[in-house]
Length: 188
Image (cartoon, rainbow, N blue to C red; front, top):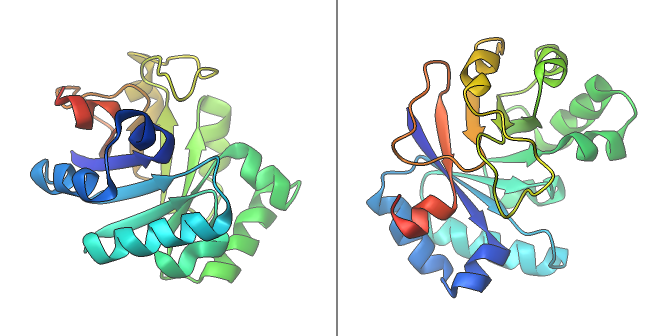
């Protein structure tokens, strides 16, 4: 199972961790992907942060939500609400994003239950995020799936990234990526 590191700007700010320190931890733990998430800054700051990450990180870099910044990275990760803002029909929304960013870029989509996984199976995606596995500080509204996560992951035709309170020692049979955030800083 590969490591997918979630670089949440608000967490970096709270813990006083620089992008350089974060990338060092990603190298130390042999992460394959970094997803940059920044829910509170303007698009220009997010672009600068992605540009800085790109110079520090030679592997896969994903931006959360801000698909208009796809030129700075290797793909985009979207939530269910993001698709709804683009088009009422998920299939059309993904097609629009794919057309905008190109076939060579990755598209990931957050899922939380069997209905969203089944809907995602019909979409032109490269992977899905599934969670939350455990309760987290950054996603307070997500109901933890716990042991159900692996069973749900088996239903996906796309590779699955388990997210939400995932730790280094968590084992899953049907998951391609462990998405690690806080555990990365704390070495859990």
